[in-house]
Amino acid sequence: MKILIIEDDLEAAAYLAKAFKEAGIVSEHASDGESGLFMASENGYDVLVIDRMLPKRDGLSVISELRGRGVQAPVLILSALGQVDDRVTGLRAGGDDYLPKPYAFSELLARVEVLGRRKGAPEQDVVYRVGDLELDRLSHTVKRQGKEILLQPREFRLLEYLMKNAGQVVTRTMLLENVWDYHFDPQTNVIDVHVSRLRSKIERDFEQPLLRTVRGAGYMIKDEAAG
Image (cartoon, rainbow, N blue to C red):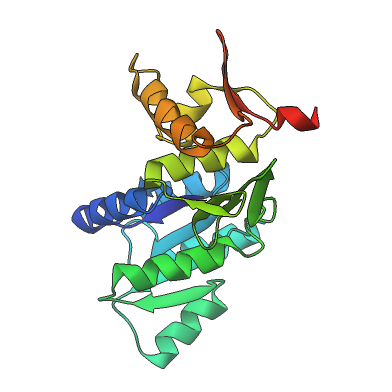
């Protein structure tokens, strides 16, 4: 999932970005309404998290303009204004959910996940399967032959991306941009290390290999037995 945080409080935005990253969610940040409007219009996001009171252009104005431009990504409004009338105004402006400040991140995360499962991300399956390997995005579990495999958050994101693109070569650049959120190749072996750990976990004690290295290209996960 990829989200945009439009928040002028830089400390709060940094906290959210760090917390989302730990939860396996890629985020980008805009610090005012104008830049937020531009980014949300030009890039495809699964969810928009928008503060109501922003410099240059307020959050409700941003939402109304986005809806007028045909941007239908689900919007979660954050605001210190938490009265019923405030929430109603925000929802009528085009917001999909409204969370008053202060809030618990666990609740914010749950709401973002719910919005991400809505119309804004219809192309994503809930469960990915490759052979006898199964990844459930909602329960955040991985099983092979019915046996649960415990993965670290980064390993889960790596496997999720590979399974989403099953049968296709996934390059290191693709992994850096979609799993690590790097927009350049830092010439690091971090990908090789994580792939090696992931391969050990999903193939250890199982006869059929699924994850292979494509020399000079990247990686591919595929059920070879199925052809």
